[in-house]
Length: 301
Image (cartoon, rainbow, N blue to C red; front, side):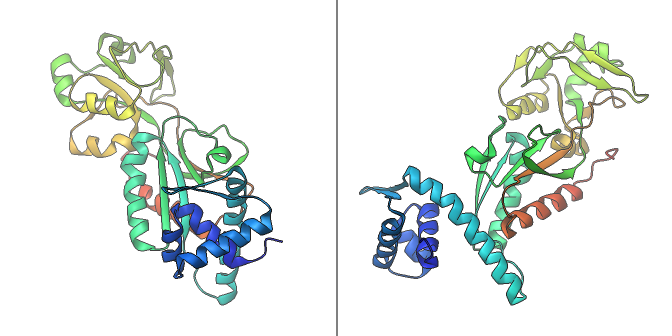
């Protein structure tokens, strides 16, 4: 049976650190002890768990499968030990977070750095990608998404309200004029990073919904590139309010058609539904919700 906690904890540190010597330093033992524990665990498991070369270590297919189970077990055990001791559960271990590029760079990356400084036993692997990852396949602990997620197999944690707004640099609007109606947008230089064939769907102050054929002269596969174009005065773009609120407040960007906006696009965090929520995940979710609440946006319900 795989019931030796020292062996399992050693295997988990090897998997995280990718090195026997680094795992040994984390555990406060010698490299020979780490090697002996790994060998014993592989003998118990009946499989080689780690590929060893002179340059690096990597997990075998069996090692990858075991790692997920070991991490879940150790997280649950550590939480139970903390509760029995009457102490505070301390965030520790590797936290994998996935988020959209712009939102992650602006809001999540700084938060991860603060949490790592606050909790020395916590490690964070932040993955920024505008594509939707399969949380189970990518072994992600928390995925942050803007808009109602479609994945019903995960637990949803609403972080804050949000919607998309039309914005441009004041220099562009001074030069080209300020649109008075949604239809006026078709006569402007539009900037997009999503599918240009999909119209912009705007909701007015009286609830009227209008679709605008938003053909863009400048398109990119990066929201950050589009944001940079907008700040440089290259045209009009539609962005999540929470991503551009600081620039609006600083006067670098201006709301176009202030009474119009997209449908609600709240910010959610997703966590796998089939596992205990460990302290590292709860601390991250609480800290992110507080950080977003502090960044109040005028007019955002």
